[in-house]
Image (cartoon, rainbow, N blue to C red; front, side, top):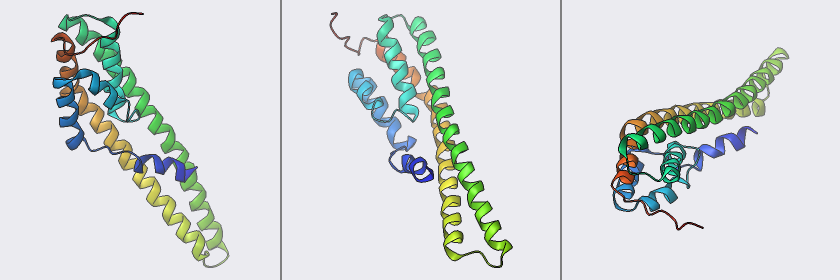
Length: 168
């Protein structure tokens, strides 16, 4: 369980400094492509931006005030769900950390704990640290994305750069 939670952090290419220009450029040139980009990383701030794009596409208006009120709420709700998902993973990894600490204490009560137990406990600690720092990065990106990318989403729809799919 611990390895699966930490593996999710290694599979993500979350670097705000690199992904921000990519997403803003996509919103300025082809907003439909930006929507597809956001589906590639749903557990990061891309998921929140994707939810805002989806909401703006559903209301089908070019009024900037209406867009801002709808996309802001959608972004905030989606970002809270993303942060909560990472918080749940942190809780699961905390249990693994406590179990590893307990194994070291039990091993130490009979003398020196076995080397394997110490190595595994150290790996669990490193995994917890990795997940904790990744969660902090996700939260930071969500806050910055709200201020820097969400206005670009609103402008893309207000300027008509998003092509709506044909009605069924």
